[in-house]
Image (spheres, rainbow, N blue to C red):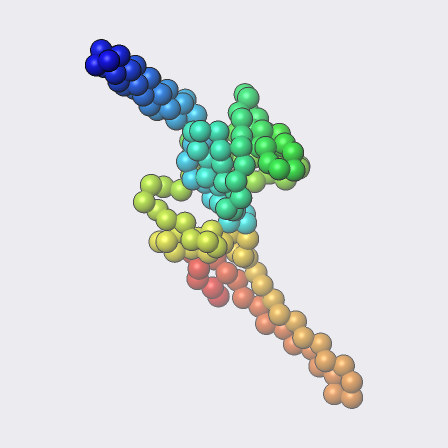
Length: 155
């Protein structure tokens, strides 16, 4: 009895070491693993080595074949071509090119897509104007504009 439990324990240790080694190798072989933030709209993506990913808190499965990532959800699957250049991931989603930047370790990402160090959601960067038209016996028109920079400053 003692001999059988010892051999079972030995088997479990060998199998566990193999599984941990395989997981570490998968992570090293998949350069997409990590946290990504889209420059344009602040979309957050977390890609895990176990074949799952999260897009703005929605869970999906994925598989990579060549330069295409197949994202699988409850609605079906979608093939998304991508290019990886260091910490920049460019994907083509339904004809729209989207650029993601890898979130640095320790650099937390806020829910609006900006980093804890500062910055704003990239979709808001640019010139914004408010226009008002009043018609009637005293008609008038006015507008006010400002430019929002990526750093969060404005003019």
